[in-house]
Image 1: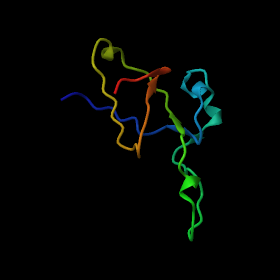
Image 2: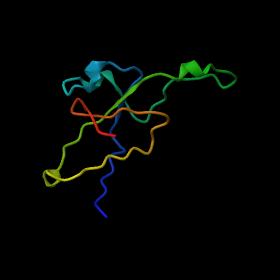
Image 3: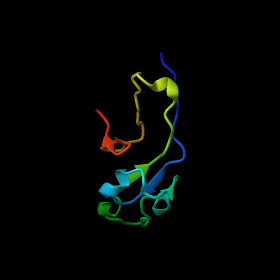
Image 4: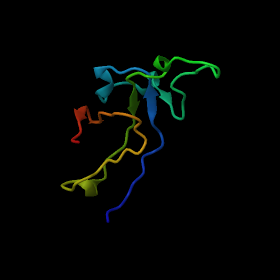
Length: 94
């Protein structure tokens, strides 16, 4: 079994999505840090549309030199419904 490296900290979040968010030049100042709330909802009643949206999570990390030429698996355990993952602006394989 291979080594596991957890990257479950230091993510940034934005409650919308734009193609420019995939790029490496996007400034993370436009995002909020985790943990966060997607939206505040009243306790007595809320419309599901308040928190159902396409949003964006970003995280920067540096690949280890030892990974070159090897298969590296990214596992996301917290995806609620659907996710499209980009690595350096390119959609990752499923």
